[in-house]
Each structure stands twice: as C-alpha cells, then as structure tokens.
Image 1 (tube, rainbow, N blue to C red):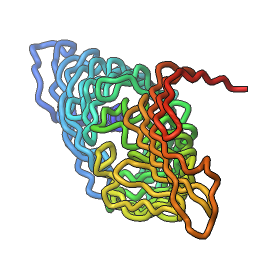
Image 2 (tube, rainbow, N blue to C red):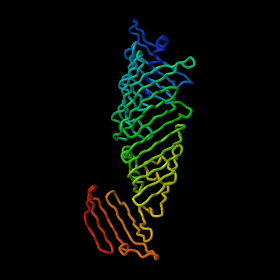
Image 3 (cartoon, rainbow, N blue to C red):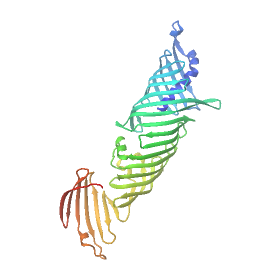
Length: 412
C-alpha cells in the first residue's frame, strides 16, 4: 500500500513537471480542433541513482486518461493500469489496479496545493510469504520535496489503516501505522496489529540489503488463536499467553534477532506448564534457545537447542530442541514422571491423552534405609475425564479399593 501511495505522488510529480513537454513530443490525433486533440503520452523514467524507474503510458482527454505502465519503486516492480484525471489542482485515480501485488485503488487523490495524498484501496488475495491477504486499506499522507545536492528528494509522511483484514480466509486483527518515508527508508513511528503487537523502527527500501532496525513488543497474545488464524499445519504444538520483546537488526534477508519471551499457562508439545521463559538469539531463520525455564506443576525444566523459524506451525519445530529435567521430573514419550518425597518416594506417571482425558499411575519406591508410612505403599491407577468446566468424572483402582464418582470444583 505504501508503494501505491508513492505511485500516486510520483505520477503527479513526473506528470506535473513533464506533461507539457511530453505532450509536445508525444503522438496524438488532431482532427482540426485543439480541444478534440487526443494525446498519447509516454513518460520514461531512468534514474540509476534514485528509487524510481520505469515507463508510464497515458492516453485520452485530460479529464479522463487511460494509464498503463510499469514502475520500479525501491527495487519493487509495480505493473499497473487504470484511469487518471488531471486538473490544475488535483490528480485523481479511479479503479487503479496494481495487479502485480493484488491491490486495487478504488479512489486516490493528490492535491497539489495541500501536497496531500488520500487513497482507499482493497487487497484482493494478495500473496505474501505464503499468506493470502485480503482487506480494505485507507491512506492519508502529506508529501514534500527536500533539496539535496541541487535535486529534490521526495518525503512522504502519514497514516495507514486496515479494515476487515482477512489472512488465509480467516478474520485477522486490523493494523494501524504512522510512518514517514525519506532517504530511501521507511521510518515506522508506530505500527499496531490489534491490541497485542506493537512495532517501531526503520526498514531500508533500497539495496544493498534493505537494512532493518525494528523493535517489537508483544503483550498477552493468545498463541493458539494466532496459529489458528494463520491456518498453520499444527496449532497444538505450542499454546499459552505470550509476552515478548524482540529486536531485529541487519539485512532484511538475514537479520539478527534478540528476543526475551514469557508464556503463561500453556503447553509445549506434551509438556503442560504454568509458565515458560527463554531468550532467543540468532540470525535469519536459525535461532538458538538460551537461559530458559519451564515451570510445571511438578517441578521445573530447561530447554536447549536450535529452532528453524521456517517450521513454525509444524510438528518438527522443536525437533532440534532438548528438554532437560531436574532430579524429580522426567518426561518420556508424553508421560510426565514425577518423584515425590525426599526419603521415602512415591513415583507418579501422568499422561494427557486429550484436552478432557488424563491417565495417571502412582506407586511406592522402596528405600531400605527408611521405614515408610504404610499409607504410602499403596499403588493406584487413576483416570480423569472432564465432562464440563467444573465437573470431572474420576475412576480410581488401588490396593485399598476402587472408586468411581464425579468431582465438582469451586474456586474461592
């Protein structure tokens, strides 16, 4: 959409400066009256040291011209077509289709006196990094020219927002951004995605490297909802409420990343935790896990290893990650195995079969040096099935007898 905004301004600038000369040298039809003359204008833009290059073709009366062409804006190619009307004060675009990026500008307006740009556009199944994006976009900006070494450099400053944003055929949080474009760089003063993601920083719009310097803050983001909205392959691999601070610096293709994250009440595969924290550091898609801690109901764990961010949403995301246990807590093939007691121990093995079904087994581990409480010698098999939010069906089979009943829980 920012590229579309630039296109609006650039069309105006180049046409405003060069239209008269272009019309004098362009082909046209002159049937005898000047007012009936239909110009065909071709504007070639070749600026090796600038962000803009390409070709614009215009044909028809000034009040309603057909426009078609291809521009390279900050190394991004834009093929476009639509209708343009010119007056002494404004340039107006109608049904302007940037088909190469799936964007249609239903109405765009550049005001010469106010040096302003207004646009309403629609994304129609634009594809970006495997995402199918649709929605409505509104842009409001002001432009100006700053002299640099005798040349005028374009600056654009404004706000952009989305409505009815849909990603991969599912509703998504709308975005709002306050920005400035100058010195071949996009300066993001504030970018909000819903209520949970905030971003600021800069992104280079021209080679070499398209350098990034971004700071991202995430507050209480529901991981399951995010993965579901993005239609990833497996939304059960990770869940919880995410809080994180992330910095990205370096070339766009392979930036370095530093991240500190905290997740509350979720799961990592078959491990269910109260909280999890970790530092992530790396570059590109390869990230190393450091300084981690997972707090479970039975103890704490740590993680070590590498993540390939290309596997987000897949079961093999944590294939290179090791979960290290403390002395009292072990995880084996989805079983949470816990030892309770320092001298005479009871071992408990619990497996979460589904969101509603848990299976547990408890038994006593003999220690010849200690006289245990006879009550701790009993072995027990337990099955729990969550019928409703506060009601659970429980069955116990033990050396001391059997039990079948419904447990009701109330919080005080």
